[in-house]
Length: 408
Image 1: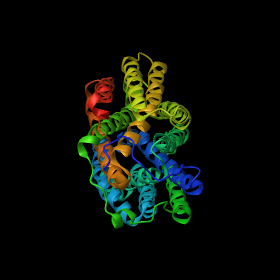
Image 2: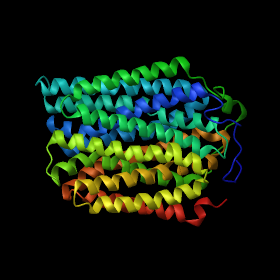
Image 3: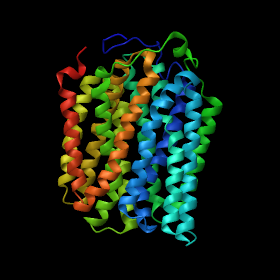
């Protein structure tokens, strides 16, 4: 593997080379993120209503993230053999099944047909089983975009992926704002249908840019772990903060600002909409226009995110809290594509599936730590998870400015 941060890649622009494939991929990512965001926003409150308690609800989310962590590298490697399309199709199908399962359990529990223990056991089993399959979505998507972009356009390509995630998160938050408080089961059935439709479109229309098994045929490159380790750790930091705040924002609105459950869902949904809008603008427009190298994007994004988290942690009122979250979205809009681009370029063109797989492990670790840590810290004080998030982001700042992070 070449030691340089800039490695050769297929001479494709992600939109110009395969516009239909990329648009279908982005549609699938939007639908997947929409379901993910809605579940993360409403499940903490629904967990209370179903009698689970904050810790058990956090455990449900964290254990699922552990399964995603284990599944990520398996699916990343599988995408080298089977192709990105097949892995995406399987993952999106599983992602469509969980909102349907959650809707059925919520309806049965709130109608008195299930007790809390049985409802929790059913949800846990469904979440873990389906997460094992849905864990292939992000590694396959990341590897597909890496196949499609040159080194110079890699940050922009990863920005498209992040922007799709942001659009989906906004849509999921909007659904939580509009229907999550009053009609959560109906919204979950709608989400299941949308993700299933996206899976059908991907299955019918997306074709791999690189033939399945091409890397196996020519020999896959080994990962340079020391070269990519800082970026994996930054991924974990970012995702732990993201998942922690989605777990506790509605709870802080209830316990620190006196909102009702329905109010807290609507307000946290609106806050996530605005936050993700900032991330979309930065990732989808600003990053692609700037054309900055990954190191510069990563460093500026880490600083902006840390400063915004400081504002959110100190927030004496809801508008200040939301302003801090918007700043966090802008910071992540720089940090995440910069980090993904640096990781991809360090891995080299023959190890994109492997790199995406281990990055999914880093994401899963963050997603596992965040909800459980958030629920536990919230018991101490509503602002405690936010101060912990600031400490985590300061680790990312230190890694971004560490000279050896980008050394050959």
